[in-house]
Length: 201
Image (cartoon, rainbow, N blue to C red; front, top):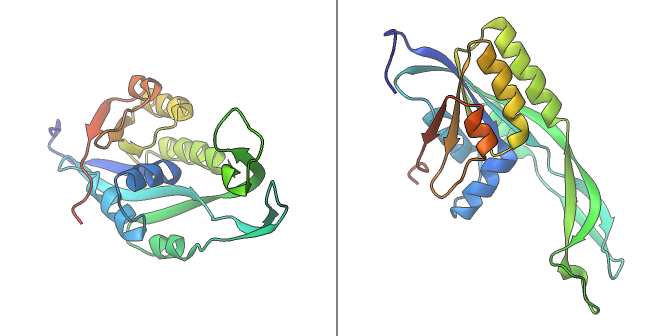
């Protein structure tokens, strides 16, 4: 992308952690603070000055639940230490929601007799992230904190946030990685689809 004015544009990178995690694991990558930092900082090009990388994710669920068939207890004990590590790094900001356990869902349908616990997967609901993203975008736009926002997300529900920023003069870049299809709603609501490769290991 070329510099139109000769001055690098103030840029904020926004990462949807749940989305990036799925893509990274599909690519066989270890998902940790090092990878997130490399991707976030690597998203900017020579026409941009990085202001900040804003990373949105949920704190891992911790708790004891009962399995759907046997009724045995299963403990979830996720660690959020890597999120603390990420938040301490230069130009990185974490914005965290919570995960609510909603029960178990069958891994395949229709349900047949004789299923065991392993035939079901835990079902979690993210809470608080959509509101945080919406408020943050509104704040960035109102303060003129960025001229360009680079997004790593696959959530078509964020299209209104894209449009809100664009209508107020902020350029929207949506990033895609090899083999990924960006939802049409996001492409329609953005200015550029920036294709990126995964960082070299």
